[in-house]
Image 1: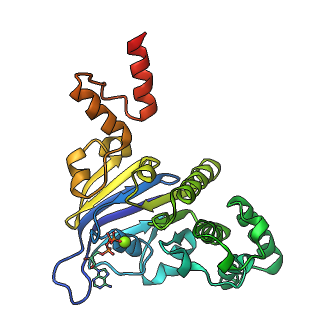
Image 2: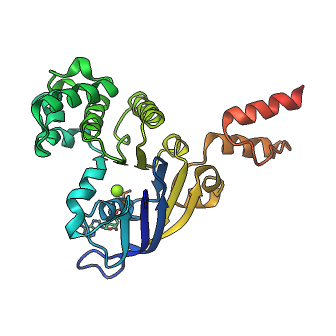
Image 3: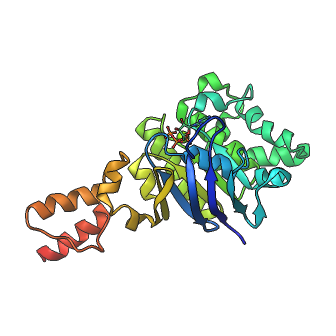
Length: 275
Ligand SMILES: Nc1ncnc2c1ncn2[C@@H]1O[C@H](COP(=O)(O)OP(=O)(O)OP(=O)(O)O)[C@@H](O)[C@H]1O
Ligand SMILES: [Mg+2]
């Protein structure tokens, strides 16, 4: 079956007593955008490392697009999944932007003509084509993350996992990466899994999974999951702006109905009330 399925997964790090993840069940649909959230140390990165086959579960199974993740399928799994990590400084391996994107393609032994095409196309997608000969020292953090994303895109994965990939960027660069992901998402059949603490990034996801105390505390449509203010507070994620506004309005006796969620929707509802 397409998508990612995690069944009854339990994982304990060697020399640790308690499992980091316990009886985890997750379904991620193909071409969906999923946010994984939870406080520091809740096992978010561990979960995606397990999905990528970099760690082996104590118990349970993981399937990526119908392929069971185990020692024998690692090559296939790594073709399906691309990663972008937190620190843009640690992701650059090439002397120039183009070399950096070429690196992954060379590893896959993509023929030179095809490689040239893919480098061009992926740098174009992330808006970095003009910088193909630039050296990493001359790039901003946001530009480096865009090049990292181009490197991933050039390998044409089905799933892109972003492990706090925007957390070290300034607000503008973060917004640029998020717009870029939104655009990619609308043009291609790629699944996005983003681990993040940023409420704006979470709100872009169709589905959200909350990890807490080694378990899935909640999973479902993002709009539903974000209604649990107490749980968001517990894991240190602030309420979405729309929720905050609703609370302020409620204190003044204005009760916005449940189905108005974003700032824009609430504005529309308020406008209707005034007419
Ligand atoms: N290699 C390791 N060996 C032993 N314990 C580890 C190892 N890596 C992580 N841990 C522990 O496992 C738990 C989960 O770590 P993980 O990195 O998956 O959390 P996280 O949710 O990604 O946290 P953060 O938000 O800080 O990135 C933490 O308690 C961490 O200390
Ligand atoms: Mg982490």
